[in-house]
Length: 301
Image 1 (cartoon, rainbow, N blue to C red):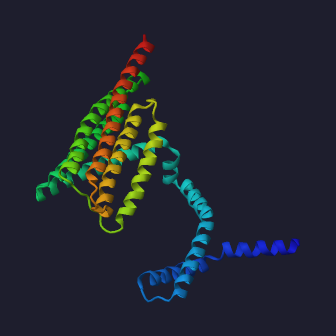
Image 2 (cartoon, one colour; image 1 turned 90 degrees about the vertical axis):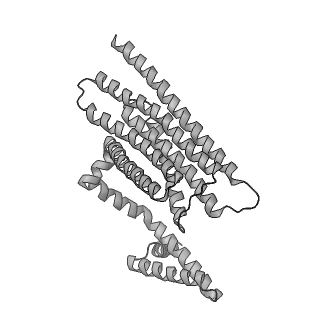
């Protein structure tokens, strides 16, 4: 009995963990068979069933290998001088996000302005305004982060950071005006957003990932121990919410059927929710920083 159990385990292990060369051939064969089954209308049913079964088996053995692959990748990343530093130093990750976001926002703002001038598009000018305000917020935080190093005492550093946090709160309200203009253009002018082909699925996955990470990070940095880092996470949250709105517009443009339902109502409702959330975030930032000022002043007396 024990011998049979051991043999079964060995067979199962061989089936789930075949050699790499076998996985390579299975992956390519199943991929080619699936393409043939999907795109050839005259494909025999037997070949279609074989392609489905083989691709399912290939997926199972690839998934079975994933934990070991991920572990190897993580170990190699942690042992690397540069990636290890990035993964272990929280402040470094936030700074890279801040500085990289600044470069991207400035690039988008310039690109939208140029394209807006070329095509005389109000929509492109509205998007340029949105990215310009985001760039201003990130630039302010970069400036505060750089000049923060010159401050000697923790008290001066906290006041310096809170000032940048407060200005970001006011700029968040200005950003909300730009977002409101974008929402009105979608609702009133029936503005659409088109993504080529299946790219919309990749954009949707990335957008939901960004929203999830923005929520996690905003909760993590809710307390203003470092006001500059807290402001960065609130900016990322606002950006993720706008991405959700634009994704909805794109999805409706791509898949919405004109069956009598006015999709502008759905876009307007989502746009209003986004604007309300960002307004609440801005108000909480301004009221929270006022409490911090009072607390710091009372502590130093």
